[in-house]
Amino acid sequence: MKIIELNQEQFSLKNITIKFEQLNQDEYIFLSRVLKRVSSKVFLDIKSLLVFLDIDELRNLLPFFKIEEQRRQLELIIQRHQLIWSSERFRFDLISSAIVYSIVNVTPDSFYDGSVDHLQVDYILKRVESDLENGAAVIELGGKSSRPGYADISPEEEWLRLEKPLKAIKQHFPQAIVAIDTDEALVMERTLDLGADIINDIDGFDTHEKLEVIKNYRPAVVAMNNGRAGFNFADNVFDELPLFFEEKAKELRAIGLKNEQICIDPGVGFFKGDSGLDSVQRLKATERLTHLGLPVMVAISRKSFMESIFNVVSKDRLFSTLMLEAQMILDGGRILRVHDVKETKVLIDAVKRYKEI
Image (cartoon, rainbow, N blue to C red; front, side, top):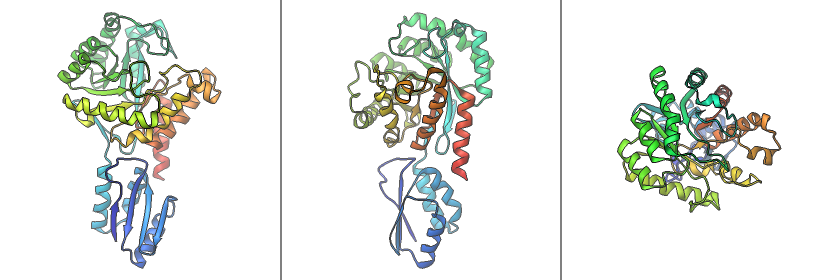
C-alpha cells in the first residue's frame, strides 16, 4: 500500500485529501472496513482509493494501521496540519480542539452587557475567576466599545480603564493568559509593559506606530479585517479576505513574528448593514481562511446580525451563537471569543467527544 497526500500546498483541518495506491485484495478489504463511516471516499478501481478526511477522522484512523511504515506516513500528514498558537508564556495545540477566549469588558457601553460595574476592579476579578474556573484559556480585557456606531474615547481614557484591572489580574491570577482588545498604539505599549500576552486589533495593525510596538515586544496577536472604512479588502469576502490576511501575515512576519504568534479574525458584526449578510459571509469564509495555516478566531458571541438573519431576539442569541460556533469548529475555527464561557466550554467538549466516538 502506498499513501499519498494530495494538495500538499494547501493547509486544512476540514478537507485533507489522501490517495491509497497499489492496493492488494486484503488491503482493499481492510480500507473498506476501516473507512466505512467516512462518506467522502471514492474507490477509483480495485487498486486505488481517494478519500477526503477532516483532521479528527484522520487521527481516529491512525490506530487501525499496525504496519510501521504506513503509520509513519499518516503521522507525517497529521504533523503537516499541526496548528499552534503560541507566545512566550503559552502554547495552544489547536489541531484537535478549540479554546475558549473570554471577553471581559472594562467599559460601561458594551453592546451586549454594558454596565458601570465593568469599571470596578472587584467585579472584574470575580468575573475573571469564574471564567478561568469554567475553562477559559485566555482572558481578554477591552477598554472601549467597538460596536457599530460606538462613541470613541481617547487612548489616555482607555488606558486609565485598563491599568488597574490588568495589574490586579496579574497579581491575583499570575498564570492567566491575558489579551488586550485595543486599536491604539499607546494602549498596546502600556499594557505590554504590564505583562499582557496578546494584542487584538480590530483594525489589523494598520499603522506604522502599532507595527513598531509589535516589533519591539513580539506578543501574540489577533489581526482583524472588519470591513470598515480604510480596508481595501471587504467587498467579496470569499476571495478578498484570504488575500488580505496573506498580506497581513507577511507584514507581521517581516517585523519578527512567527506564524505561530498570528491569529486572524474575519471581523463578523463590524460592518454596518441591516441585512446581516456580510456577517454570515465572513463566517462562511472560515474554512477558506484556514488554508493559510493560521489560527482563525470565531468572534460572533451574541452579535446582532443573528436577529436579522435568524429572527432571534436578543435574549435568545446564546442558542444561535452556540449553533454557529459548532459549525465553525467543524470548518476549522479554533479560537472562540465569547461572553458565555461555561456554555462554550461544554460545546467544545461535546463536539470533541462526538468526533472521537
